Image (cartoon, rainbow, N blue to C red):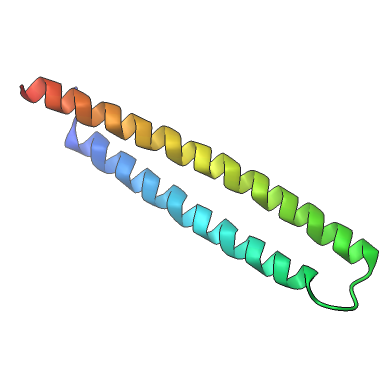
Length: 85
């Protein structure tokens, strides 16, 4: 049975994941700004490119998690609606 507690919990998880996505997006911007600074060695550029690649991967994982949570929320809402009918 879909409970409001389960729904509230999912909404909280979605909010947490969204906050994490925004944090990673800010980190990506910071890395891009670092990459645009003149005078970086190739070693520094390689390090920053790898860091950016890892952050992008983390962002994709978080977005996938967010999508799964939203689908779960939708299923809970449909179940709640079905039970109320």
